[in-house]
Length: 122
Image (cartoon, rainbow, N blue to C red; front, side, top):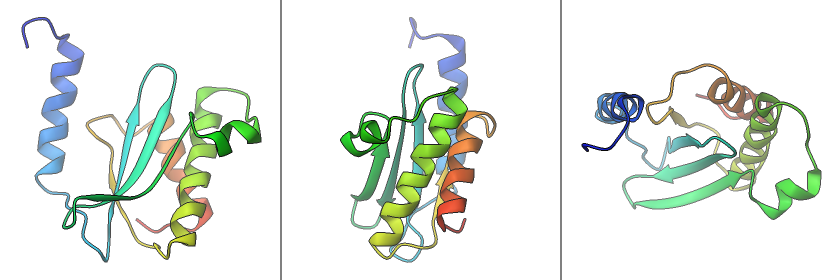
């Protein structure tokens, strides 16, 4: 990790600290969020089976067809709505939020608010 930035190292430390307490089971799967500089990704994961149940991102064909424009925060909220709708279609109502070491503000908070509006409980 000699060439990694201090911000990345700090995020990975936070990620480890969070993940030792968060575990997704069939009753409450884990909603994992990752953000890059351009895109945002969300997955609902069952850690007991180690499978992804539902996923959504800004790269999905269905999301691109909606043509959401605006700030990154608005786009993240739309992705949250999309993953919430997909989760409800698969019978998932309760999840545990895994913010993946990112601070809970901005796009991460917006995505979780969008998922809550769609009907998910965390």
